[in-house]
Image 1 (spheres, rainbow, N blue to C red):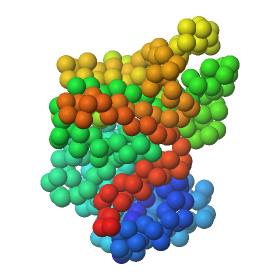
Image 2 (cartoon, rainbow, N blue to C red):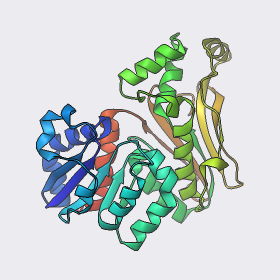
Image 3 (tube, rainbow, N blue to C red):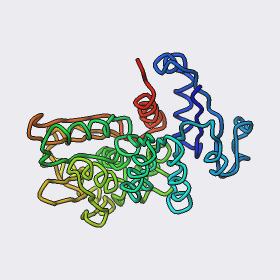
Image 4 (tube, one colour):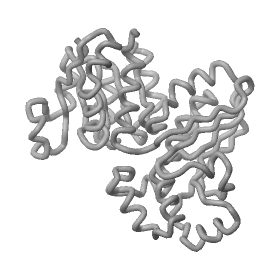
Amino acid sequence: MINVALIGYGTVNSGFREIFEEKRAEIEEAVDDQIKIKKIVVKHPEKHEDIKNLLVDRIEDIIDDEEIDLVIEATGEVGPIEEDIKKLLEKKNLITSNKALVSKNFEEFEAIAKKYKRKFRFDAAVGGAVPTIENLYTIRTLNDVKRVSGIFNGSCNFVLSKMEEGIDFDTAVKEAQKLGFAELDPSNDIDGLDSMRKLRLAASILFNKPIKEENIDLEGIRKITNEDIEEAKANKQRYKLIAYGDDEGTYRVRPELVDIDSNFGKIKDNENIFQIETSNAKILTFIGPGAGKRETGFAILNDFLNIYRIR
């Protein structure tokens, strides 16, 4: 029996659970074991009557439960939980979609996982549904990496795509929130913080050195107007929020004009693209949804299978 605990039960973990219950038979066959969601920690238990038999009050209730093998954290919090997560990682395998938490504590989390022989996975924090992280480690091992670039935030890409349709910025943001692509406070997305954290993690892995958030030049998309969008269209270009890092130490996230028919120009709505230039594999490109309930739930389950799959 693989006992699982969840921290948070919002968009991401509810999406994970939906897919898990739909595909339970296939997943249990792949891991050759039964799986049980044993405990869930939430801030507002009164909002979760349907799972009240699973609810516990504190992360400590999970840390101290020796039967729990794996914890899936999807809260978006950092300060209030990071010390608990470090203690948890000493005893449990961990999957998280929380890019702010991972970005702040990446090297320390990796060191704890190595010391205590735990599995630490965070693909959902970087690529949405795109299976990125495991591939990055493989690419780094087998290549000298020259540069990484891409569109790392599905919410921003969705907003810019809608602005091309004539929708104003604020309305496009509200639509992204309604569809679950952007949070109630969308500033992490539209100010570029989400892309910056993803670049920090991807570049740190690919270049095999700690690249801190403060090393990355940052500009979001708030200043882009519908007039800017129309002028770009007239020149067969469009705005994209591009993340970029190279082996010479340049790291940035900023809006850039790209040709409509280019690889980046063809990325629409909530899609992400990762492009990595290497010595042996040449140019590798990964494309897929970067935001959404079931998309991120899929990424969580992909990490789960990477830990436990035997078939």
